[in-house]
Length: 255
Image 1 (cartoon, rainbow, N blue to C red):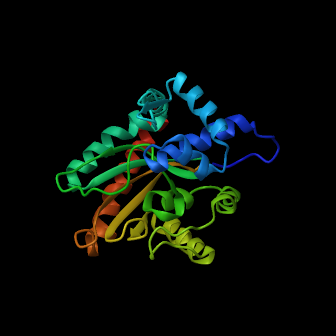
Image 2: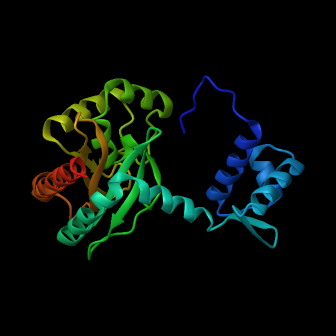
Image 3: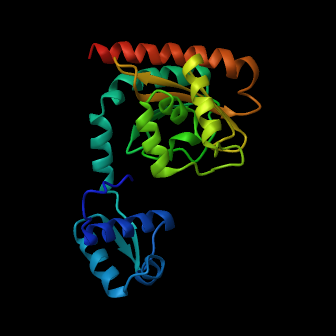
């Protein structure tokens, strides 16, 4: 997450979130594992973990701590309050039924893409994408569609903060290449992802923009490369997504 250089972080809060992040990465862990991974004293980790457990954020079984289901209440609350959730949800469902593929609605928050709603068609494939997932914008179609329609200074700030890390050997990692592709996306209106986030998976993404033209989110459809190719990938699916995104934009403007 982007940090404001004008503030001094509260170390105990930072430590608590480092512990939660480590538990998420590992699927659960004990005190010793957490202390070793984070470079902290066991006593420090123990105090933080017990505090988080007492507040309901963690559960413990046989010395292994995990993030509790209590956080689902916060996640659901945040998602349900976002203006795109109610407006874009029905269109995402419709597109999934029409394409038979996986369709997502994604927003940008703190410079990364966040999946807030998804729907599966009859032939959807399973990938790492999940509700609430946070992904660098340059790595996937919906993210690139958003990047292409953000103010230039915002794009620069995002790249400065997160860089251009690779997820596959096809991920864009060169700034000039990325900016050329963003220009192409602005010209044609949609973004393509050919194995840049998941090997063997193609996707199309279209931005959802506000009255000023800035992206507030995007919708995307993804499927196996041997199915999403040719005119389906470059013509038919983009037309469907652009039409769907436009409907969402109109409905947002009158909500």
